[in-house]
Image (cartoon, rainbow, N blue to C red; front, side):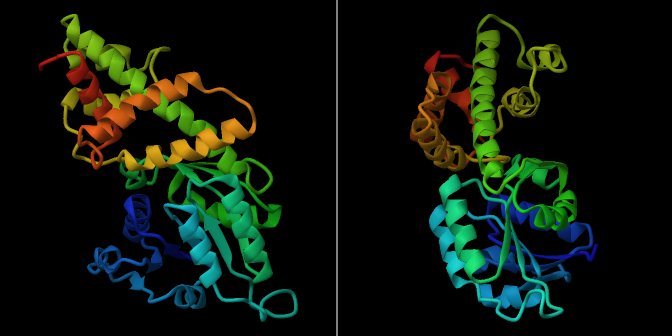
Length: 300
């Protein structure tokens, strides 16, 4: 596989993916609306700033997109140039967008429809994990789309993901990511409840984390975010609160459209709203522990 990729969207997650790939000798062509997002990679000789969406399509066939909203995805696809000269009748391959964002299924489907009109290929492959694991190349991906496009996209995803699961038709990736995010949020809130109750009854947070980690009661969230709760330091941002709050709208919409109640998820979500109100917006979501500590008058 040629070690070069393009990426559009250099936010919290996109920049972490980019940094990991650059450190592993990839040539990266990057584009973001914010100049500051591009300038953070000035020290890398193998990072090449692009000045527009069209520019990035002219440089690379494989293009990662990691965008925060349906509007951003639509804007990107609308700005993409048509590729009349690609296809079977020429030696030039149609561009392949590997869409990594967590967005509603209908937003992905609309983007695919527009992409096809422009003779651009696209797979739906949202990634699971936070900035911390992205910097380690340990994200997980739910890869969906046309079989041939999946086969072409997978080696690129393998370059920065420790697990890539093929989940079928285009759109299944987003469905899988949204239901997986329910577990992520619930596990995080429950982890915080466990830590606070344990501390209230006199157990040291380090001991709680050590004793439960690796047992049947544990989870990856307990072991990862629980460590931040033990340290009581949420400034190392893995994934701030704005992302799960945004995703909650998509999850609620999906559940409502399919008449599936999510009472446990919505109760767990209340801690996130409280965290936003208490000023933790830009800190790691493990800060729900601090919210519960405040609610229960726990002083460390």
